[in-house]
Length: 373
Image (cartoon, rainbow, N blue to C red; front, top):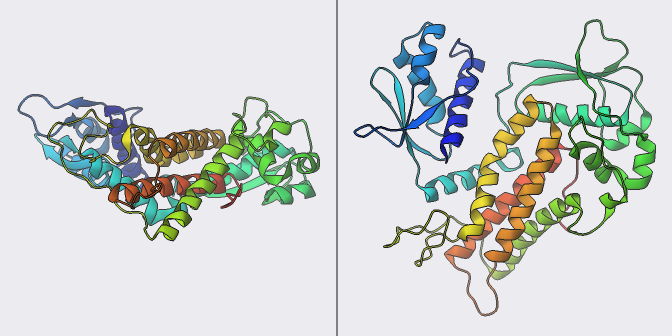
């Protein structure tokens, strides 16, 4: 966990405390964390509790206690102490512990990994034009904000296009709303739902409509149907299918995913590198993939807050790219006469987590994740 990661984690804890009404104070734009000074406790320290004590009308020690409860269980955080008048002092988890916590969370939560309750007190209403890109975007935003706990209604300016249902789009109401609502108005697609379905089918059409940011034109050409690595949608879905195939292959070889073996090497290697005794089975190629998986909950929340499903699409592309780099550098399955080892089980756990993240993200975009391609 980097200082920037820790800062975001603490800021998320502040937002949760405010959302849950445990803390009544304005959420700061950012939270500053600093290296602990000589003689201090932990790796990093933060004075946000002292900053919020006045607006919250609470003692700084009480604010620190509220925040500590919401930070201490986060992946990558080993220990949180309250020191002095209300400073939060953080000791980061060892890399192996942090990685295992992330993979455990993916395994336990499955496709719901990254879902949360940051928006649970929000009742939202979105309104869009009778246009296919606006309709598909509003539907994807609905899925994202629901994944973060919000309640949502969607209305359309006119009666929906009947072909929208084949793209998985539903509308709660249509017509002019009695009060102004939040508008979902991306650059129009320049094609109807029926035309896109005939040319691309539902999955490629939805990806093309959602992949670009709302202020950019959507790329809706035949390249979306190319079955090759140049097509990001194919690459994402193939990475998912490959991850599932690894699980099936491991079962045929008589082993399943397991935690990473870890022991401190006599000569510490650079962070993320594989020391001689094999205590980092993921190798250097596994670090980017682990980091992307750990970032996934934050990407989903940002996509929900900013009404930006394109952020999720780009995250999935990055996960797929990192998955193939890892897969090629550190094969999860033994080859030839090689016997399955603890390292193979750990690599398989990382590959399965990547597959789960890809399937969950595609599901939020309304796109199927086939197990065979």
